[in-house]
Image 1 (cartoon, helix red, strand yellow):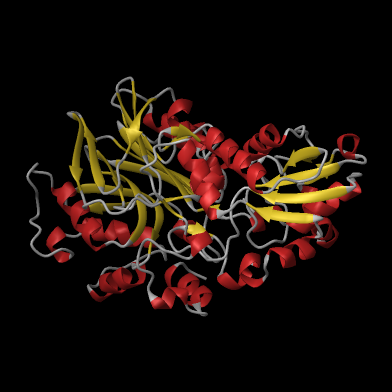
Image 2: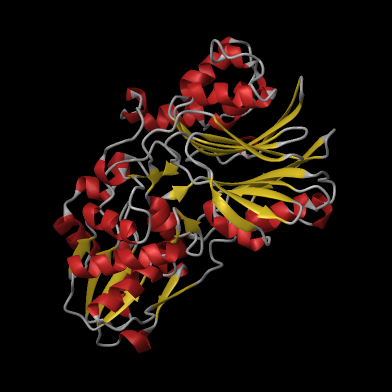
Length: 496
């Protein structure tokens, strides 16, 4: 899929959704297809499925949406009793089939497939180590680096680790060895000849959950994928946990000692589907709580509350309930404009946001509007949205954002833009308000956001809020934060 218009450019982009299933006697390829379909929001650039029947592994992947990549003819050959799947957003400059997932290679002990969500902050060092050992790499992603590390004897990467473990499982030993040297974010679904494995980094930066269905088990980035195929949610995979699923059922071991919990807070703000269960609560309820807190912190003298569809709807509902202002639809969204490979011509590019939204003038005429958005990243859509409401008849537009200002880039697997591109890094709130043309602008405070999340979940949970605070939970190599990050990272590590 190609993004058109400006709207997608001002959204942080979660780079992957992963799915895995072990279910003898079931059509695992078809179940994986529908699981990925439910995770489509996590990645709309490429999709892939790998399966194994205990002897051979099979794979199909391509660029495009899940529904564009798969059909009855290419699903039919994907035989077996276990499968992994992946749907991906790419980082800038890496929109190539060679970087799509899952990765599938043949090893001394049979097939090895890997689906990865996240970003290793030490991927460049690990990549160089592989190349020095003579390992050839066919792509430019850290996910292939992970695959090749897992293919090697564990003592290569972690001295003192035998090629085996107390369970007699060489793959657990290899995954554990990887987890000792990996830094950054990863949630993994791993396919071998007879078992499915799932692993999550010790901070739990990226989500991963476990479910049960008739005849087997499932792992997925979000619980919405479990519900779609009729699986029952069991629990989250814990930070640092390593799960094996095979004919004996579920076995769990500690792959790495857990560290301070740091789930990406943007899962609550924007990434996760509203019906997903995360950290014990439904995302839609958490976002409503953010809207309620925003109304307490930033009231507006207005007539109606209007959301930016669709992601800001829950926060707008919460804002409306607390403020007492009516919730109305003021913008209609074309939900299919981003699902085409046909690019707009120069004139259509100039109208930009109108490709995605149109104002509902009958609801806006003469109204003082509180426009609710979940985030502002680059700031290139807020101004056209404010203008659309004015063109639709709104007399005033007061912009309210249900998350804090995004001032820092992400290095753990989210395409958040560079520091220089972030509008809140360049301008204060008053400056942003002037630039977007709103009558007033206010953000939810960092403390208020955490308070709203805690209201709707277990209080001991903690989050990575580095994009707001600049406090990263993992060590960020100096080269990754340099002014040359775009060139160095995207050309050397992820392609050009």
